[in-house]
Image (tube, rainbow, N blue to C red; front, side, top):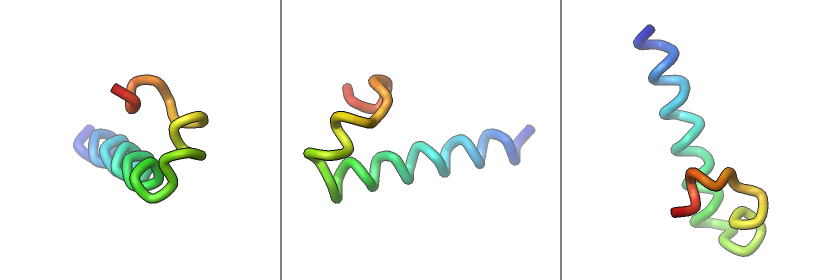
Amino acid sequence: MAQILLHGNLHVNIFEASSLSHPGRASGGAPKFIRK
Protein backbone atom coordinates (compact mmCIF):
# COMPACT_ATOMS: atom_id res chain seq x y z
CA MET A 1 0.00 0.00 0.00
CA ALA A 2 2.75 2.43 0.93
CA GLN A 3 4.50 1.77 -2.38
CA ILE A 4 1.35 2.69 -4.30
CA LEU A 5 0.98 5.97 -2.41
CA LEU A 6 4.64 6.80 -2.93
CA HIS A 7 4.32 6.06 -6.64
CA GLY A 8 1.30 8.35 -6.90
CA ASN A 9 3.10 11.18 -5.11
CA LEU A 10 6.06 10.77 -7.46
CA HIS A 11 3.80 11.23 -10.49
CA VAL A 12 2.23 14.36 -8.99
CA ASN A 13 5.68 15.82 -8.31
CA ILE A 14 6.72 15.14 -11.91
CA PHE A 15 3.59 16.88 -13.23
CA GLU A 16 4.16 19.89 -10.96
CA ALA A 17 7.79 20.13 -12.04
CA SER A 18 6.73 20.00 -15.69
CA SER A 19 4.19 22.76 -15.09
CA LEU A 20 6.79 24.99 -13.47
CA SER A 21 9.41 24.48 -16.16
CA HIS A 22 6.94 24.64 -19.10
CA PRO A 23 3.97 26.71 -17.88
CA GLY A 24 2.45 27.42 -21.30
CA ARG A 25 2.57 23.85 -22.61
CA ALA A 26 1.88 21.99 -19.37
CA SER A 27 -1.09 24.13 -18.29
CA GLY A 28 -3.01 23.00 -21.37
CA GLY A 29 -2.21 19.30 -20.99
CA ALA A 30 -2.04 18.89 -17.21
CA PRO A 31 -4.98 17.33 -15.37
CA LYS A 32 -7.36 19.87 -13.82
CA PHE A 33 -6.72 18.67 -10.26
CA ILE A 34 -3.15 19.96 -10.57
CA ARG A 35 -4.17 23.35 -11.97
CA LYS A 36 -5.83 24.96 -8.95
